[in-house]
Length: 339
Image (tube, rainbow, N blue to C red; front, top):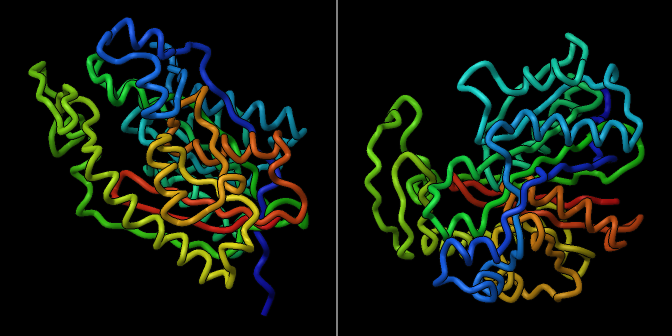
Protein backbone atom coordinates (compact mmCIF):
# COMPACT_ATOMS: atom_id res chain seq x y z
CA UNK A 1 0.00 0.00 0.00
CA UNK A 2 1.40 3.42 -0.97
CA UNK A 3 1.90 6.01 1.75
CA UNK A 4 -0.39 9.03 1.93
CA UNK A 5 1.12 12.10 0.30
CA UNK A 6 1.64 15.04 2.65
CA UNK A 7 -0.13 18.31 1.91
CA UNK A 8 1.80 21.52 2.45
CA UNK A 9 1.20 25.23 2.02
CA UNK A 10 4.14 26.79 0.22
CA UNK A 11 2.77 30.11 -1.08
CA UNK A 12 0.22 32.74 -0.02
CA UNK A 13 -0.67 36.04 -1.69
CA UNK A 14 -3.67 38.31 -1.36
CA UNK A 15 -5.41 41.19 -3.08
CA UNK A 16 -7.49 44.03 -1.65
CA UNK A 17 -9.57 46.38 -3.81
CA UNK A 18 -8.33 49.96 -4.06
CA UNK A 19 -11.36 51.75 -2.57
CA UNK A 20 -11.07 52.42 1.18
CA UNK A 21 -13.88 52.99 3.66
CA UNK A 22 -12.30 54.70 6.65
CA UNK A 23 -13.63 55.28 10.14
CA UNK A 24 -13.68 59.01 9.36
CA UNK A 25 -16.00 58.34 6.43
CA UNK A 26 -18.25 56.15 8.56
CA UNK A 27 -18.34 58.89 11.20
CA UNK A 28 -19.53 61.35 8.55
CA UNK A 29 -22.32 58.95 7.58
CA UNK A 30 -23.18 58.02 11.18
CA UNK A 31 -22.22 60.94 13.50
CA UNK A 32 -23.34 59.00 16.58
CA UNK A 33 -20.38 56.65 16.03
CA UNK A 34 -17.09 58.40 16.72
CA UNK A 35 -13.83 57.32 15.08
CA UNK A 36 -12.49 56.13 18.46
CA UNK A 37 -15.68 54.21 19.23
CA UNK A 38 -15.43 52.25 15.99
CA UNK A 39 -11.76 51.47 16.53
CA UNK A 40 -12.26 50.40 20.16
CA UNK A 41 -15.23 48.21 19.28
CA UNK A 42 -13.98 46.37 16.19
CA UNK A 43 -10.25 47.13 15.98
CA UNK A 44 -10.49 48.38 12.40
CA UNK A 45 -9.40 51.78 11.07
CA UNK A 46 -10.26 51.17 7.42
CA UNK A 47 -11.62 48.43 5.23
CA UNK A 48 -11.43 47.85 1.47
CA UNK A 49 -14.60 47.82 -0.62
CA UNK A 50 -15.06 46.42 -4.11
CA UNK A 51 -16.13 48.92 -6.76
CA UNK A 52 -19.58 48.56 -8.30
CA UNK A 53 -18.14 46.76 -11.32
CA UNK A 54 -15.80 44.51 -9.28
CA UNK A 55 -17.04 41.02 -8.48
CA UNK A 56 -15.60 38.05 -6.62
CA UNK A 57 -13.94 36.60 -9.73
CA UNK A 58 -12.10 39.90 -10.32
CA UNK A 59 -10.59 39.90 -6.82
CA UNK A 60 -9.82 36.18 -7.03
CA UNK A 61 -8.00 36.52 -10.36
CA UNK A 62 -5.91 39.41 -9.02
CA UNK A 63 -4.92 37.40 -5.93
CA UNK A 64 -4.03 34.37 -8.06
CA UNK A 65 -1.97 36.45 -10.48
CA UNK A 66 -0.04 37.95 -7.56
CA UNK A 67 0.63 34.44 -6.25
CA UNK A 68 1.78 33.17 -9.64
CA UNK A 69 4.08 36.15 -10.18
CA UNK A 70 5.43 36.35 -6.62
CA UNK A 71 6.33 32.66 -6.44
CA UNK A 72 7.01 32.09 -10.15
CA UNK A 73 4.41 29.34 -10.44
CA UNK A 74 3.46 27.83 -13.80
CA UNK A 75 -0.26 27.96 -14.56
CA UNK A 76 -0.01 24.84 -16.70
CA UNK A 77 1.20 22.90 -13.66
CA UNK A 78 -1.89 23.71 -11.52
CA UNK A 79 -4.09 20.59 -11.32
CA UNK A 80 -7.09 21.72 -9.29
CA UNK A 81 -8.77 25.01 -8.37
CA UNK A 82 -10.98 25.43 -5.31
CA UNK A 83 -12.79 28.74 -4.84
CA UNK A 84 -14.33 29.47 -1.45
CA UNK A 85 -16.94 32.23 -1.65
CA UNK A 86 -20.42 33.20 -0.50
CA UNK A 87 -20.68 35.99 -3.07
CA UNK A 88 -20.39 34.22 -6.44
CA UNK A 89 -20.60 36.18 -9.70
CA UNK A 90 -23.68 34.18 -10.74
CA UNK A 91 -25.93 31.42 -9.42
CA UNK A 92 -24.44 29.48 -12.31
CA UNK A 93 -21.99 28.85 -13.84
CA UNK A 94 -19.54 28.07 -11.08
CA UNK A 95 -17.34 31.12 -10.46
CA UNK A 96 -14.31 28.80 -10.26
CA UNK A 97 -14.87 27.97 -13.94
CA UNK A 98 -14.71 31.68 -14.83
CA UNK A 99 -11.49 32.07 -12.87
CA UNK A 100 -10.08 28.90 -14.44
CA UNK A 101 -10.57 30.40 -17.91
CA UNK A 102 -9.17 33.82 -17.00
CA UNK A 103 -6.04 32.28 -15.48
CA UNK A 104 -5.52 30.05 -18.51
CA UNK A 105 -5.42 26.80 -16.55
CA UNK A 106 -5.34 23.53 -18.47
CA UNK A 107 -8.70 21.95 -19.32
CA UNK A 108 -7.56 18.87 -17.40
CA UNK A 109 -7.59 20.91 -14.16
CA UNK A 110 -10.70 20.59 -12.00
CA UNK A 111 -12.49 23.68 -10.67
CA UNK A 112 -15.17 23.90 -7.99
CA UNK A 113 -16.83 26.45 -5.71
CA UNK A 114 -17.50 25.86 -2.03
CA UNK A 115 -20.04 28.09 -0.30
CA UNK A 116 -18.48 28.55 3.12
CA UNK A 117 -17.80 31.63 5.19
CA UNK A 118 -15.44 32.37 8.06
CA UNK A 119 -14.40 28.71 8.41
CA UNK A 120 -13.99 28.37 4.64
CA UNK A 121 -10.20 28.50 4.54
CA UNK A 122 -10.00 25.46 6.84
CA UNK A 123 -12.64 23.60 4.83
CA UNK A 124 -10.71 24.41 1.66
CA UNK A 125 -7.50 23.07 3.19
CA UNK A 126 -9.35 19.89 4.15
CA UNK A 127 -10.57 19.33 0.59
CA UNK A 128 -7.15 20.14 -0.88
CA UNK A 129 -5.47 17.77 1.57
CA UNK A 130 -7.92 15.02 0.59
CA UNK A 131 -7.27 15.50 -3.13
CA UNK A 132 -3.52 15.29 -2.60
CA UNK A 133 -3.69 12.36 -0.16
CA UNK A 134 -5.88 10.38 -2.57
CA UNK A 135 -3.56 11.04 -5.48
CA UNK A 136 -6.29 12.79 -7.48
CA UNK A 137 -4.11 15.92 -7.67
CA UNK A 138 -0.51 16.67 -6.81
CA UNK A 139 -1.27 20.35 -6.17
CA UNK A 140 -4.25 22.63 -5.54
CA UNK A 141 -4.79 26.36 -5.97
CA UNK A 142 -7.13 27.40 -3.15
CA UNK A 143 -8.67 30.86 -3.49
CA UNK A 144 -10.82 32.57 -0.88
CA UNK A 145 -12.68 35.65 -2.14
CA UNK A 146 -15.60 37.73 -0.90
CA UNK A 147 -17.43 40.93 -1.79
CA UNK A 148 -19.57 41.07 1.35
CA UNK A 149 -19.96 44.85 0.97
CA UNK A 150 -22.51 44.12 -1.78
CA UNK A 151 -24.65 42.28 0.80
CA UNK A 152 -24.73 45.16 3.33
CA UNK A 153 -27.55 47.68 3.59
CA UNK A 154 -26.17 51.24 3.25
CA UNK A 155 -27.66 52.17 6.64
CA UNK A 156 -26.29 49.12 8.48
CA UNK A 157 -23.48 50.87 10.32
CA UNK A 158 -22.68 47.82 12.47
CA UNK A 159 -21.83 45.46 9.64
CA UNK A 160 -20.34 48.18 7.46
CA UNK A 161 -17.82 48.91 10.21
CA UNK A 162 -16.75 45.24 10.35
CA UNK A 163 -16.66 43.69 6.89
CA UNK A 164 -14.18 44.34 4.10
CA UNK A 165 -13.72 42.81 0.66
CA UNK A 166 -10.67 40.87 -0.44
CA UNK A 167 -9.21 37.65 -1.82
CA UNK A 168 -6.35 35.32 -0.97
CA UNK A 169 -4.64 32.67 -3.09
CA UNK A 170 -2.87 29.70 -1.54
CA UNK A 171 -0.76 27.04 -3.26
CA UNK A 172 -0.93 23.58 -1.68
CA UNK A 173 1.11 20.61 -2.85
CA UNK A 174 2.54 17.25 -1.86
CA UNK A 175 6.21 18.15 -2.14
CA UNK A 176 8.69 18.38 0.72
CA UNK A 177 8.75 22.08 1.48
CA UNK A 178 6.22 24.41 3.06
CA UNK A 179 3.87 24.30 6.01
CA UNK A 180 2.63 20.76 6.60
CA UNK A 181 -1.13 20.59 7.20
CA UNK A 182 -1.60 18.46 10.30
CA UNK A 183 -4.85 16.73 11.31
CA UNK A 184 -7.96 18.86 10.83
CA UNK A 185 -11.04 19.27 13.03
CA UNK A 186 -14.33 20.40 11.44
CA UNK A 187 -17.78 20.99 12.87
CA UNK A 188 -21.29 22.17 12.03
CA UNK A 189 -24.40 23.29 13.92
CA UNK A 190 -27.11 24.30 11.47
CA UNK A 191 -29.43 25.57 14.22
CA UNK A 192 -27.42 28.81 14.08
CA UNK A 193 -28.18 29.46 10.41
CA UNK A 194 -30.82 32.19 11.04
CA UNK A 195 -28.35 34.26 13.09
CA UNK A 196 -26.13 35.17 10.14
CA UNK A 197 -28.06 35.12 6.90
CA UNK A 198 -29.04 36.85 3.68
CA UNK A 199 -32.61 35.57 3.70
CA UNK A 200 -33.79 36.74 0.28
CA UNK A 201 -32.25 36.16 -3.10
CA UNK A 202 -32.15 32.42 -3.75
CA UNK A 203 -34.87 29.85 -4.39
CA UNK A 204 -36.54 29.54 -0.99
CA UNK A 205 -37.10 33.25 -0.51
CA UNK A 206 -36.49 35.36 -3.57
CA UNK A 207 -35.44 38.99 -3.44
CA UNK A 208 -38.31 41.46 -3.17
CA UNK A 209 -38.82 45.14 -3.85
CA UNK A 210 -39.70 45.74 -0.20
CA UNK A 211 -37.49 48.49 1.21
CA UNK A 212 -38.93 48.34 4.74
CA UNK A 213 -36.22 48.47 7.39
CA UNK A 214 -36.32 46.48 10.62
CA UNK A 215 -34.08 46.93 13.65
CA UNK A 216 -31.83 44.14 14.90
CA UNK A 217 -30.78 43.37 18.46
CA UNK A 218 -27.99 45.97 18.36
CA UNK A 219 -30.30 48.69 17.07
CA UNK A 220 -28.97 48.56 13.49
CA UNK A 221 -31.40 48.68 10.57
CA UNK A 222 -31.68 45.69 8.25
CA UNK A 223 -33.76 44.34 5.40
CA UNK A 224 -34.18 40.69 4.38
CA UNK A 225 -32.61 41.46 1.00
CA UNK A 226 -29.34 42.20 2.83
CA UNK A 227 -27.10 40.58 5.44
CA UNK A 228 -28.60 40.10 8.89
CA UNK A 229 -26.36 39.28 11.85
CA UNK A 230 -27.47 38.62 15.42
CA UNK A 231 -24.24 39.77 17.03
CA UNK A 232 -25.09 38.55 20.53
CA UNK A 233 -25.88 35.02 19.36
CA UNK A 234 -22.78 34.88 17.15
CA UNK A 235 -20.70 36.01 20.11
CA UNK A 236 -22.22 33.33 22.37
CA UNK A 237 -21.64 30.64 19.74
CA UNK A 238 -18.03 31.71 19.32
CA UNK A 239 -17.27 31.71 23.05
CA UNK A 240 -18.77 28.24 23.40
CA UNK A 241 -17.35 26.62 20.26
CA UNK A 242 -13.87 28.05 19.72
CA UNK A 243 -12.23 26.99 23.03
CA UNK A 244 -13.59 23.47 22.44
CA UNK A 245 -12.29 23.59 18.87
CA UNK A 246 -8.80 24.59 20.02
CA UNK A 247 -8.76 21.79 22.58
CA UNK A 248 -9.86 19.23 19.96
CA UNK A 249 -7.22 20.38 17.48
CA UNK A 250 -4.51 20.09 20.15
CA UNK A 251 -5.79 16.70 21.28
CA UNK A 252 -6.06 15.30 17.74
CA UNK A 253 -2.51 16.40 16.98
CA UNK A 254 -1.16 15.30 20.38
CA UNK A 255 0.02 18.79 21.28
CA UNK A 256 -0.34 21.15 24.22
CA UNK A 257 -1.12 24.87 24.21
CA UNK A 258 2.48 25.59 25.18
CA UNK A 259 3.80 23.75 22.10
CA UNK A 260 2.06 26.15 19.70
CA UNK A 261 4.27 29.05 18.61
CA UNK A 262 1.51 31.20 17.09
CA UNK A 263 -2.28 31.25 17.08
CA UNK A 264 -4.07 32.75 14.07
CA UNK A 265 -7.85 32.86 14.41
CA UNK A 266 -10.48 34.13 12.02
CA UNK A 267 -10.23 37.92 12.32
CA UNK A 268 -13.82 38.60 13.34
CA UNK A 269 -13.39 41.77 15.38
CA UNK A 270 -11.07 43.03 18.09
CA UNK A 271 -13.51 42.62 20.99
CA UNK A 272 -14.24 38.98 20.15
CA UNK A 273 -10.58 38.09 19.58
CA UNK A 274 -9.51 39.70 22.85
CA UNK A 275 -12.18 37.79 24.74
CA UNK A 276 -11.22 34.47 23.12
CA UNK A 277 -7.51 34.96 23.77
CA UNK A 278 -8.13 35.60 27.45
CA UNK A 279 -10.62 32.75 27.80
CA UNK A 280 -8.26 30.22 26.21
CA UNK A 281 -5.29 31.71 28.11
CA UNK A 282 -3.14 32.41 25.06
CA UNK A 283 -0.24 34.82 25.73
CA UNK A 284 -0.52 38.07 23.79
CA UNK A 285 2.84 37.58 22.08
CA UNK A 286 1.67 34.26 20.59
CA UNK A 287 -1.68 35.57 19.31
CA UNK A 288 -1.56 37.25 15.91
CA UNK A 289 -4.06 39.88 14.83
CA UNK A 290 -4.11 41.55 11.43
CA UNK A 291 -7.31 43.34 10.45
CA UNK A 292 -6.90 47.06 11.22
CA UNK A 293 -6.44 48.08 7.58
CA UNK A 294 -8.57 45.51 5.78
CA UNK A 295 -11.46 44.59 8.08
CA UNK A 296 -13.13 41.20 8.41
CA UNK A 297 -12.64 39.65 4.97
CA UNK A 298 -14.57 36.50 5.92
CA UNK A 299 -12.89 33.40 4.40
CA UNK A 300 -9.72 35.38 3.58
CA UNK A 301 -8.89 36.63 7.09
CA UNK A 302 -6.68 33.69 8.10
CA UNK A 303 -4.54 33.52 4.94
CA UNK A 304 -4.14 37.32 4.94
CA UNK A 305 -3.03 37.16 8.57
CA UNK A 306 -0.67 34.25 7.85
CA UNK A 307 0.96 36.18 5.01
CA UNK A 308 1.58 39.16 7.26
CA UNK A 309 2.81 36.95 10.10
CA UNK A 310 5.49 35.71 7.69
CA UNK A 311 6.34 39.27 6.65
CA UNK A 312 6.68 40.34 10.29
CA UNK A 313 8.87 37.34 11.12
CA UNK A 314 6.32 35.75 13.46
CA UNK A 315 6.45 32.48 11.51
CA UNK A 316 9.83 30.88 10.94
CA UNK A 317 11.14 27.45 9.95
CA UNK A 318 10.11 25.07 12.72
CA UNK A 319 7.11 27.14 13.83
CA UNK A 320 3.86 25.43 14.79
CA UNK A 321 0.83 27.60 13.98
CA UNK A 322 -2.69 26.77 15.13
CA UNK A 323 -5.37 28.24 12.85
CA UNK A 324 -9.08 28.33 13.64
CA UNK A 325 -12.05 29.56 11.63
CA UNK A 326 -15.63 29.93 12.85
CA UNK A 327 -18.87 31.62 11.89
CA UNK A 328 -21.77 31.52 9.45
CA UNK A 329 -23.61 28.22 9.32
CA UNK A 330 -22.75 27.72 12.18
CA UNK A 331 -19.51 26.06 11.09
CA UNK A 332 -15.99 25.83 12.46
CA UNK A 333 -12.66 24.24 11.69
CA UNK A 334 -9.06 24.20 12.84
CA UNK A 335 -5.69 22.61 12.27
CA UNK A 336 -1.99 23.01 12.98
CA UNK A 337 0.52 24.08 10.32
CA UNK A 338 4.05 22.79 10.85
CA UNK A 339 6.63 24.97 9.08
